[in-house]
Length: 122
Length: 172
Image 1: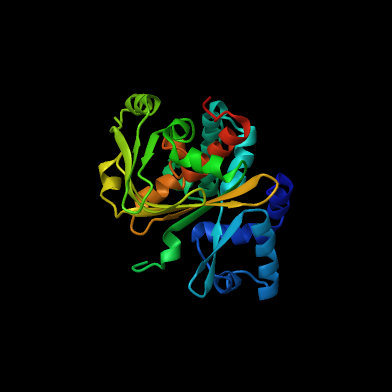
Image 2: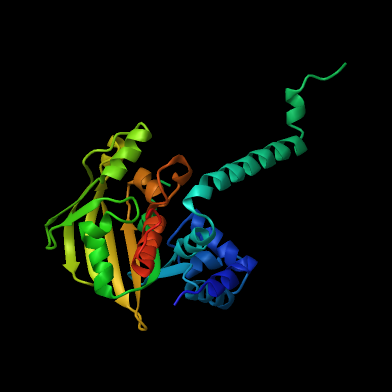
């Protein structure tokens, strides 16, 4: 049975979030592939994958002799649905888009690129 | 990226639902149920290998399409039943006909598996094999949700869970 507690606990660890990020980039990976991308022992990665699997965030599927790991977004969707209904959804999306845009501009400014766009006072 | 392994183009969704396997099977296959959750549509399955599978748009679905300036055809999904083992396993091909570019992509394949997990709980796993169907893959992953294309399979099966557990879907 999937409980929110397990999902939040699974997400509370940076290594486990990083494993989910890897699967989000490219789904259906083997343990060996995942292991090569995090600085951790095979046993450590296995332990983290088990926590993710118990939380329902990772689903495994056999393909021949390989065990492939897939990101299952449904438990996160259920958390989303619990606090965000379809009426607030578009407002939330608009704010997220604004944040992304402003942060992008800030990053550009920090890199000094926006100065090129502005006329310099002589 | 010329020849990606097959697994990269497969998407897997799993959800636990407090309902009998037969109730979940009915909600997946019977039009009076499929019209009530997710994108809504009247499913029609000829539940034998080689049988046809179609989904017709509901009036609400068509009205939403008109409002977005994208008229919806009468039949929005067409496929063929490959395997039907009620109430546990259903394999069909799946082609979305709402957009000509998506309809022109290779035919994809969906497997629904329902397993009893005790205490009146069932595990529903939806596996969508999407080889060569990049546009459809993005839609069913919910990538275009902010642009009105819906939240894909995750949205649909979480809505199915709400409907079966509470008697109401998100839109009701």
